[in-house]
Image (cartoon, rainbow, N blue to C red; front, side, top):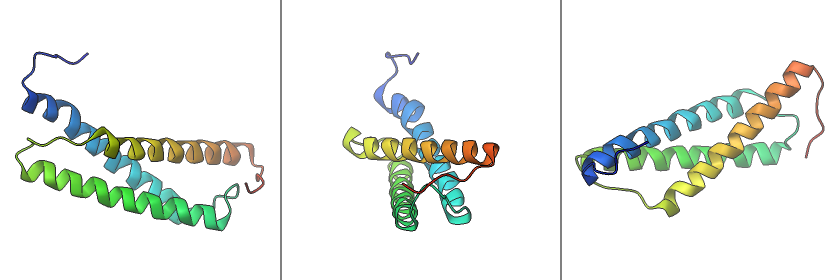
Length: 112
């Protein structure tokens, strides 16, 4: 549990910095998967759309990281900006999990 007695700048460093690093990591993994794998249960258009959204989100996270560092780690990010990233990471996790299950069963799945 986080220490709520931390000064706000320390709280930002403790929470926001690793969160941005996590988003950057997971969007990078998702890009690698979507660029190198054919996801049979997604239409080509759906896979292309997901890839485009991941690329955009990864760029947004990179800008947020740059701004965070440029301000001496003194600026926060609105929840309204973080939630779409979180939802997209969750969507990517679901695709990766389903793809892993498909590969382990050896059976192709129908496109959705």
